[in-house]
Length: 299
Image 1: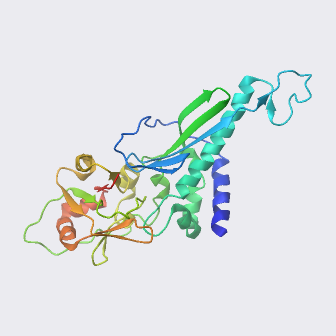
Image 2: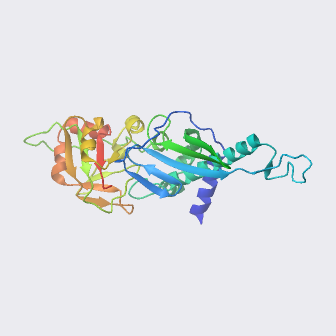
Image 3: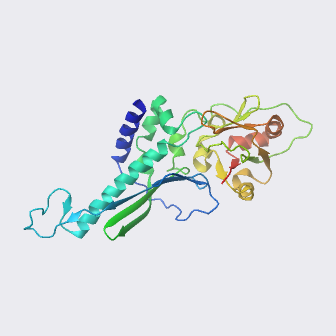
């Protein structure tokens, strides 16, 4: 009940200020992107880094005749332009509410959804309170008797979701080191293949641990600047595209996840030998510090 009350209050607060960003967004999503439908009106693109929500509203009844008893009564309009304006406003508000609900329902990490974390973190609630200023209009359409609109929220960039999520827990500890190895690979990043873990769930703040439980990657060890610019990770369904992502450089480590952790099944385990190779050199540790990680997941 408390969770529902928090969500209702938060949705009302966000949708009450529809100051949407004017920045451009892509109109087409590549077919091999990891796009998951939340419901018939909302979806999340874990590759491109967007959450989408749409709404379609019928035009109110139009009464042109001033002598008609229903002229200018509540729920009616006196012109087509007025009817479209009202429907457009209602569609915008409804899409904003749906987008807000979709965002708060996203998996934040291996333990919490965004909403669950908000219940425990007052600072996060306050930062998300003006989220609608980051919403972008992807498309508008006026049809025969209706108006539709689609909104989007990007994950990355200065006006993206990570600019709000990235709090004081980011960059709060160093990337761990390991003892010197006989041969040190100057690895430029990590491509982590998760396709053998069928219960894995993408999240906004994924963490990677060694098989001994040592944290080697997550918000605690990455910079806020790279998080906003790149995001902590991108989820690919094509390993070739993952290897070509500029963030992982020319010589990334390609490894397979050894397991999944957390109630949300979003945190991953890297076996000891792969972790040692990545952490043995300053270059490898720096690559983790600056978000040089991508995931390969099932379609």
